[in-house]
Length: 208
Image (cartoon, rainbow, N blue to C red; front, side, top):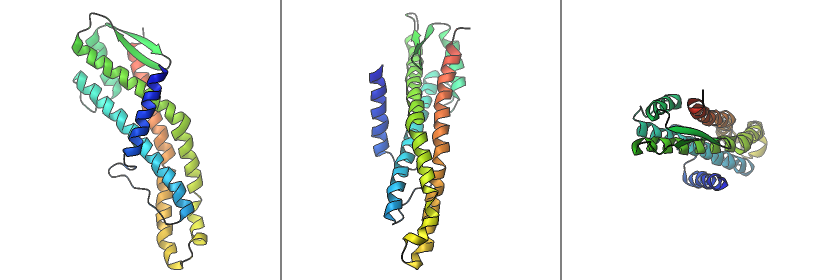
């Protein structure tokens, strides 16, 4: 199963390289013209993009699952699993692949129901991948960047030589620092969201 994890990791990396850092309506981290700040803010912008990409990917997979089951596209994972459990009527077995809950259909399951099972398995695998990535990378990296950038606003007057530019650059730095300060909570929220999916699948199909 290691190849699956590696493949998903490469997919997330590829998407993060092409996806915009900020989602629609989300504030952008802007260049300040202060080199030592912009180097750190660029890393924060990349992190913002990685969080958004993985969040969007999970949302897309949930929508695909819900469509396959015929439930509302924005229905919560618990609703989707309750619907699937009712439809498969005991024709699947829950098999734990490490932390990944996988549904194994029996030979009598109709092909139209297997689509929902396959979508569930794909979402489960992606959710564990995202959860692990948040724990080992996105959360600690966001906390480190938030700690570093919190000190930036106070340093602007000593780094900007032109007094006429201090006010403008201070404003940009403060806005950027605020965005970065919110990244740890967003990364933790993404981790919680992915773990909720794993728990919902496991709970729905665990033996009573």
